Length: 232
Image (cartoon, rainbow, N blue to C red; front, side, top):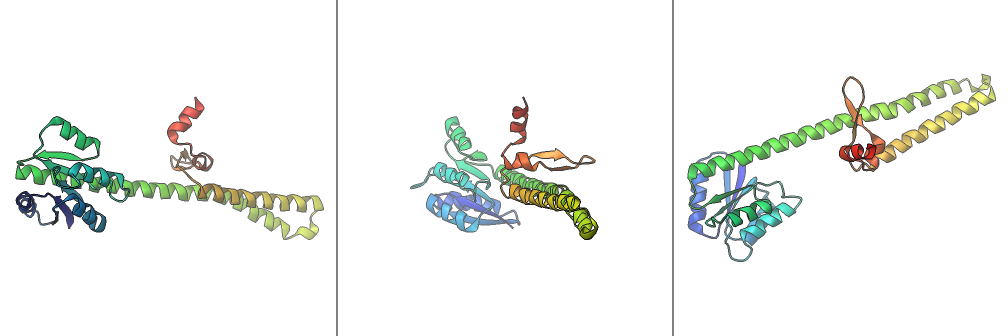
């Protein structure tokens, strides 16, 4: 079920919108009669989409939309403004503060249902894209760890194998192997430290077209765009 919040101080308009959307079985309809109630429901129930009137007592629709889009927890909720205000300036203002769409009253029922479905579909696609990006980032991190840590780890293991026979090794070689183990261990420690302060993800080509994370540039906050500027 997809939760739709209708916000309108006119109970007749709110009922008309609710009856229009009730035709869609997968919609769960909620209502709020003013801006304060709307913000409370949005914070508590996290609706999938908000249909928002503009002219309401107290907090008007513009302010409600602005607060929705400024809140990190709600900014991706689609907001469709429904208003009798037909002036272009009102429509442009709604879009500037983050409204995803603007429908004027009286509305066409079929158009309303279609627009709601379109914005829910867009939201679902954006969520799917975000999940794919997270998976891609995790894959890059896996390749990065395999490359950046596996190489010095292999060197550490190799030197430890040599040191098993340290009694038969010249002192200089023993010291060199121990120095190598320390150096490679510090490299791993540095990699872990760099990973802990990643501020962006700068990819670099690994093998066969796969990508890994450029740890040094990512930890220093150099974005791909900044990387190009840095090179120019």
